[in-house]
Image (tube, rainbow, N blue to C red; front, side, top):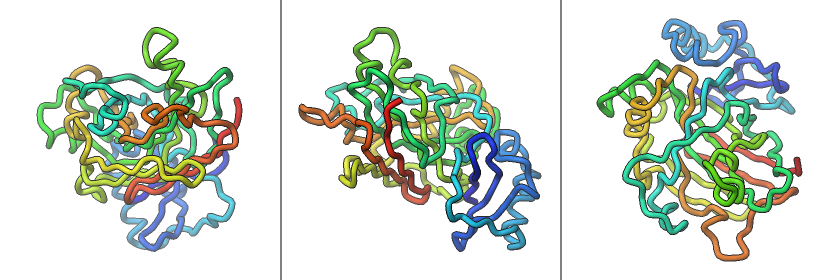
Length: 285
């Protein structure tokens, strides 16, 4: 299933994109799309049955904002330097273990919402990423099979980053990762049954129409299953938590000088095979 939330910010309603690409209203079946729904097999079954019956009301998609596909996100866990080609372009060695950092849940916005360039920023960068959405509470998982069984679905994430704040201003990466609007998510949450192999997905990103990133999740140093298993040994993952699994080569930081960092007026578009497409215009904060 392709689950999404539509409407003005803060007042989104649950929806579903059916097999024919028709947007349908789920608000008569479930109150929202969140961790509570993802952890409730009976509720998900009702959604699936309603979708298959074809009786859900049709929504007019024209001019309708798409919000983040998940409400009340608990935490956004991020994995850094998780693609072989991205590590090479930045001159970094492939890490021996996953690099883990966090984004605050309030950085998450809709897939087509405006992205704000922070005040004082000179190095705002783009990163297309596969987001993993957790559907079952995960603690100390031992096998890849266990890990994938705890995944509810997948989505497109844009891990916007400010490289000077991240790398040159001291401390951890968090200062360059948590600026307002720095995590567009969606358009859909695609349930795991529709993604048979998360290591076989194409990722692409364009800036002002120019292709910048053209990668595949096959290049991940730590595959999705290993990431979920590993993270579960350092923190409890709850339904509705999100893991951003890293970006392939092609970011501004990895390009020759003068590096083409983002500015107000730029347009970024990104997509992952089968998971939908995003488009953001940048403006100054």
